[in-house]
Length: 186
Ligand SMILES: Cc1cc2nc3c(=O)[nH]c(=O)nc-3n(C[C@H](O)[C@H](O)[C@H](O)COP(=O)(O)O)c2cc1C
Image (cartoon, rainbow, N blue to C red):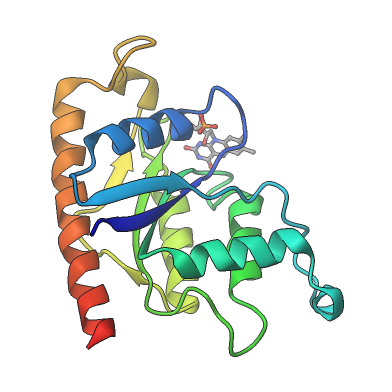
C-alpha cells in the first residue's frame, strides 16, 4: 500500500516556484509514495472563539492532515520566516487542545528562494514550529534550494542534478516515514 503524503505548497501565487517544485517532486517520488496537495488558502485565521461553531474549512483541513501518513512542506521564505498562511494552517490543525493533528507526523521541509540562501531562515522557522506541535521532521538531508529560477530548464523541468538530489531526498523521506508509521501501528 502506498504512503499518503499531503503536500503544503507555501505560496498561493499561480506561477509559484514552490508549486513547480511540488509538481516535480510528485513526478520524482518513488512508487510507494502518493503526493497530494492540501489546500489551506481558505482557512479563517485561527481564533479560539470560532471553535464553538467550527468553520467547515478547519474541519476539512484537520481531517486531511489526520488522514495523511506524512506531510511535505515546499515553502518560500517570507521576511526570514514562513508565509503567514502556512503558519495559520499549522495553528488550525494543532487545536483544539488534545486534538493536535501534527503529533508524531513524519514531515519533510523543502525551502526555496530566488536568492542565494535557499530560504534557510524560513525553513528553520518552520522546523521550530513543527517541533512545537510535535511533528517528526526529517533531520537529514536538509533541503534549501537557492537561486531557484536557475534550477529549472527555462519553463521546463528541473535540471538533472537537482532531480537526482531530490530523488535521493524522497527516498530518505520514504524510509523515515515507513519507520515511524510502522512503529505507530505496533
Ligand atoms: C512578502 C515576501 C517576503 C519575502 N522575504 C524573503 C526573505 O526573507 N528571504 C528570501 O530569500 N526571499 C524572500 N522573498 C522572496 C521569495 O521567497 C522568493 O522569491 C521565492 O522564490 C518565491 O516563492 P514562490 O515562487 O513559490 O512564490 C520574499 C517574498 C515575499 C512576497
